[in-house]
Length: 325
Image (cartoon, rainbow, N blue to C red; front, side, top):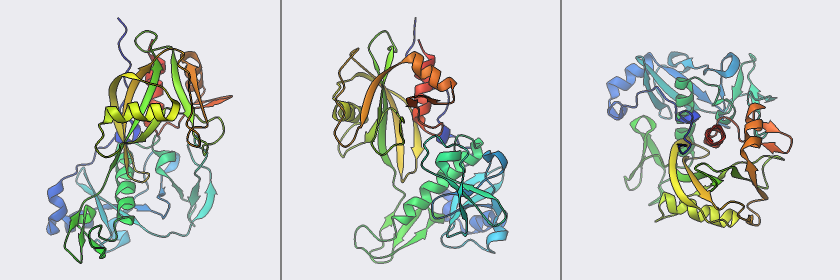
């Protein structure tokens, strides 16, 4: 009997080997030791970091190279094999325009420093990095991005200061403590109701995307809304289709700026007419499994159909569906 399709592997940015021990974040003695023997993930203002050859690992620096002691803006990412990993963000003198290892979206480029070392964005190297590096960079980008938006208290407006090794802020006015925010968003692969896994998948494109780029539908969860209700609402709003059999597939952090993508599958009537939302969805189509398989076999791109890049959970969802019957 045919089973409902599943994700073929752990989503790319959900991989991590680093120990996140909350108690360490307030232990000054332990933090000092983790810095003294630690390594630092550097981030430029665009969230890019130096990577090694082939972009399979991060080119971290020893903490001692950076500073004698951890500065207030140093962010503890965690510990792995006895080594503490930190992140620091700042302005860097870089040469722009270096081609990215994964140019699937065609929107971001890398850079190089004066020594020729390449700096790349999480979206363009996430799928290439090893598990440890992928987890470190995902956390670094998420934490650094949150701090950019948490410099002032949401209650009284006073400046905040970083505490708990970067995992909280303390208001200098009212004393309120705040923790990193993550905004839930659903992403749903909708297939038709022919058999268990359908014969066609619903793909759409936003007007701002590169030509021929298509993906599955996604949207943010509203206040007071369940994840499943969000799936049904977003699909109806974006393409005018009612879905059923909504089921969970998996999740992936997506720190652009602070989302977690919660993946679902759902079915819709075969041949259901599509009505793209004006200004939000430029085009939407039912695409047969054979065409998706052909695009995946060609590295994600065919004439008229460019799939999401391998860093996105959307790509993994499509690969799981395409492999099913």
